[in-house]
Length: 260
Image (cartoon, rainbow, N blue to C red; front, top):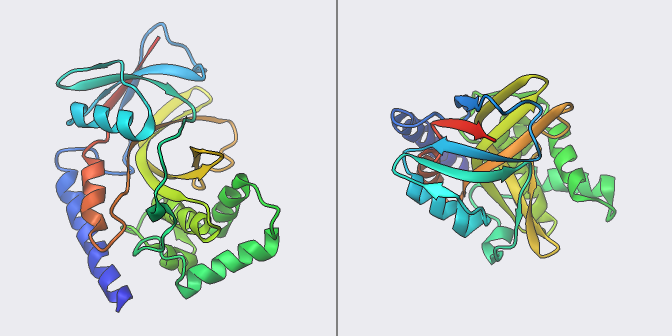
């Protein structure tokens, strides 16, 4: 029964995304990015960035409230803010970040078997980076054909894009009693002389009294410098998750500009 409901909601996610993308960039699509003439590659570890978005005030409030990222200026079309390669924050964690949910269904048989394989391999001597690496190596087929697969389906199919990596990583963390949440946003990737930005999904886990970022999809991206710009976490992990994703997609930037 749950699988049938999931397939219906996957269709709903595709439909909602199609409606949303008529006004905002589609999730996972490339986002136009430019730099000031006096900014040279490679970029510094901390940069200033201006982003064009349909909802600058809402995005500004979300960044401040949920990620401790304080925008410098906000107007009717854009937000200017400082950005580092990785970010941490100490917002309080909630019991929901350990729960089995419709999306992060780590008690389902295929997800439970996946966790057991991890525990058998690492016993009690694992680091957070081991979770990233394990999920990265476990998903053997990178594909963009899925709308949004739940953790048990990802554990079974071993395929997907960044959203599937994030969902399975969150499931693994929670099954190990590590609070975890799924975050959607923008990845700015510098590689050699190229700079690209696109919609992305990753995970935040709570350890040592703060949230820190894990990304199984881009784990081991050799030679790349990655800046993460969050939009919001996925708070609705129930059957109505598609509409929550659509709201987050509406916060993604339409364009980015890096300043000195």
